[in-house]
Length: 207
Image (cartoon, rainbow, N blue to C red; front, side):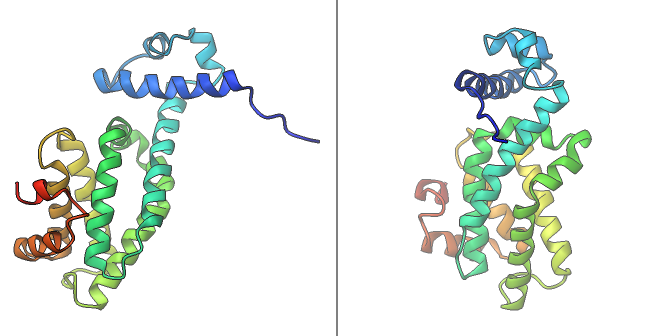
């Protein structure tokens, strides 16, 4: 038995709902399903044809954002764990600027487990970087590798939720913060970023 592919209008409606939800929730994190449906130009009935309820819609937003984050983690292949962490932080920040609403929703206690499951590949990458950095002496060793990886994760989540993504120097701040948590001094971070200007815009490095 073959599975019928979703109709084009159905796929477009679903994508439109997700886009409308991001925009609407950015303005009002408590926006109702009715408001989101109107923003998408669809009826409430049509929206419920795609998502069972508001929580299902939010979980989908988190999952879509997580897929983009996980893809970035897979693409970072630098041998030097310091460069890999800096590049990972910078590229994740660029995505966070676009999916910051989903990231903020993911910080809600009600979605912690779903977020953790969705971001499992990214978390494994961070854990591996922590181990590599400790093994070659690049990262601090006063904490166990799993603890350091968790600390990097938590600080990254805080930076995403508390920093204005549109502000000048935001990406630079995000990268330097995680390098600092990993054990690099501000001078080490400065030297690293100046040697690899492609990681963060050169104007931000000097900001």
